[in-house]
Length: 260
Image (cartoon, rainbow, N blue to C red; front, top):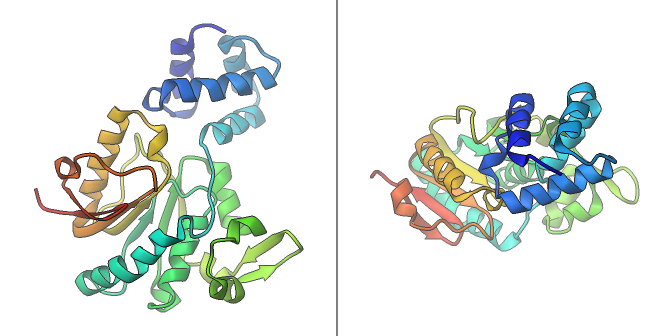
């Protein structure tokens, strides 16, 4: 294969996904694998295929935006959120919090947030903004159907209360929970961020970005949060020098927005 630089330019024109912002070796390996599966041996030919075949273009975007998700991923971190972070946010901002689940994938995370909040706030006072770059994944999230293995870390009280078993392997989430989440397509690298958030949850996504892209995203997260609001990140994503982005580390994986 040849001319990966030219390929990146073409993909940006087609999809508005900037491959320069992703770790190159990792991303190029994923793309080369997908191209080989299509029986094509050049970037130029593959771009032509994507231009002519919408199904292949959708497949490419879904494959590119790595979607691994589950309810209550890393349960010990959700315990910190419930016991140490939410009480502080409720006291500071009241019970009707503005929460953004960024790069929400198949919806497991924003729906987990709704279920957790429902222990303390009536459902009609909960609205989560949930965004992802991948339109197909958002449609899947809106459908609210999940494999049983996605629910393995979720507290049983939520499974019992908010899920219906469809068959041995599939569960459907309650419409009451679905109605609390507003799904929107959003590109972290180029779109405008929501403003004056009380909590932003963005987990297990930053690991795929270059250091330059991370600086840009953390800076924008800081600008999106109110002072004393929180950012909740993934298990492998501790922020180096949070102070330069206007954050203070409060617990592992939780950062408070501070005035610089």
